[in-house]
Length: 213
Image (tube, rainbow, N blue to C red; front, side):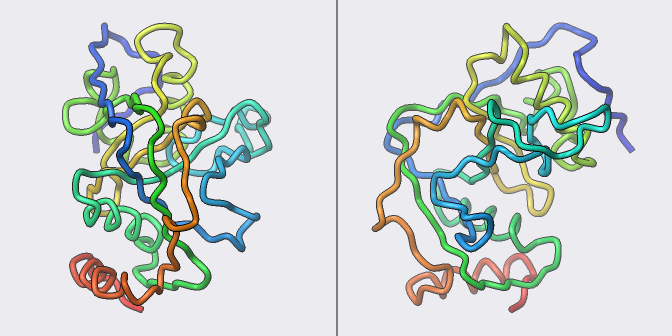
């Protein structure tokens, strides 16, 4: 198993960045019945998920409200089908069962370019760590996310991170609260996950990723 050292890096870095141009769309699957989540809501309670940069409480960084830090997980690709696939497996991949419930699919649009630290392929090593931070226990990835967020040079202007998810290596992104002003989404860009227009694509994604109802 590859060793994941904690930050800071022990050697100079030469990070890779990805700019997603204004006008592009992200994809997000969310459940509006869960903690009143909305299309554009950034989560300030954490750390919970992989690259959460919340400070938490105590030496164990137990999850807590952090009014100064918040995260937004979504997917992006030049091919929206690939982006939706990444979202579907991130939501349902642990159980392998697609339980739609009240979940919605949103396609927020970028009002400005997004600047992301690219941790895909060689990107993680060039940022001073290893690609396994996208597939390890969350606390290791969270410490690197806090480092990227807090560092005064090299990384301090990024809106978030792009990485290959742990389920099917789909392009996945996490935005820091810095990215809030980049997103907008009207009601026409939100569909129920069980909308008939999405069903053929959802079934194809399920088949390709060995998911069931």
